[in-house]
Length: 155
Image (cartoon, rainbow, N blue to C red):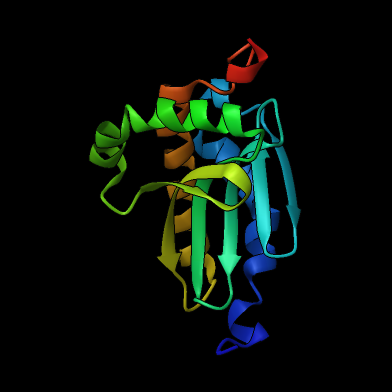
């Protein structure tokens, strides 16, 4: 692993600060989320922990992923994927071309981007907290996961 704990040490500070940083940056209606962190990732969700926003340090590649993960059953994941796929052009227009939508392991899917991180210092933590809040705000405007009474397969 090319990174030492000294360079990556503030990842713990990032995860500790993240819920407060997000609540300061998100609109009022998106501030009532549940937050969990463990190891190299943190999750933010509104109703279902299997449909969550995630900040995930990928140590081997030296990157931080920010994204929305669909980790429910295949049918629900397909419906959520289709919902965001219909809006991918506007998502990219809002957030940039670095945002990807893909199916991956175990029938899961995700809308995500990854950022190089040589150091997890104060400036990087603030930049990523702002970016994560913006990603949540844009994707929630399309998916409305926080306000949905039901997710697709519940209906």
